[in-house]
Image (cartoon, rainbow, N blue to C red; front, side, top):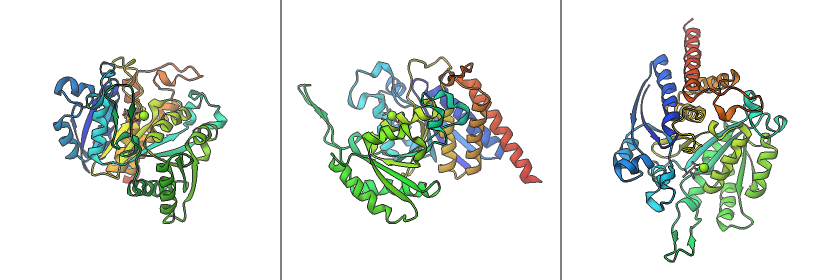
Length: 367
Ligand code: IPM
Ligand code: MG
């Protein structure tokens, strides 16, 4: 299998965690005899610095010419005061739009090995395994008009959705549900917003094509509470862009750290894989960032962009085993007060484990 991957380390802890994710992918390639090519490019604050724009033309064309894009994080304190197109985040949003992945998959699960890292009770999170399907290219993030008024005294954004935008992401949610527990919870604010009324009607209509999948609707405010009080009750959670952004950070509490979460943005010509966490400038450059979110994003890349399901599963298993050994970064010290390891040590443990697992599987197939 040949795969051209564009790597966008980005800002803050992005480069540190991405390096580990690439090492894991390279190991999979070496052991299984795949040919993965990696090419790095700039995005975000790093790109503003060197190229004068958060998404340089060269970066974008490299991404569009590759099979998949693996991104670290964007955002730097230096640009906090900037607005509009000169924010590092604007580069990421422009990239998402250009790559066309409208369905952002964010799996969240409670890992037994680190159950003590969640502030929630173990019996509350046990068995939780949620797939958030966040609409990524519409709603308040992209719709026009939007502006800060000239006098600086008011500002506005537009929430807009079309039936087509809702349908296409709903299909992804229903298809994913078919591979899981066949349950979709669609989250909206239909008691107040017209966009949500359209959302609810369209999702209900789309569901008719999936009679084997159970659909329920929930209002975002009460859902935010339910998800955290009874997380094991949910399977696939389908929602619009901003609600999905907020709910996915909240959901990270279930698994113990935002640093664990991975994401895949699919549906467009080139899929984009990125951990859910940000650039974390406060800990950048210290070698303490959690690489599991980036590594699990690499697993999603193999699953969705290369169809290498077994390899992806071996990466997941290696993450679980590394957690079980107590080899974790400082954010996962937990109530058991584990001694923290650095980013590189955690990454290397995953690399070694995945190599072992893949080799023994190949030996098994050979006999
Ligand atoms: C995320 C992030 C981004 C978003 C930011 C960095 C633009 O919070 O991926 O969840 O809001 O989508
Ligand atoms: Mg977010």
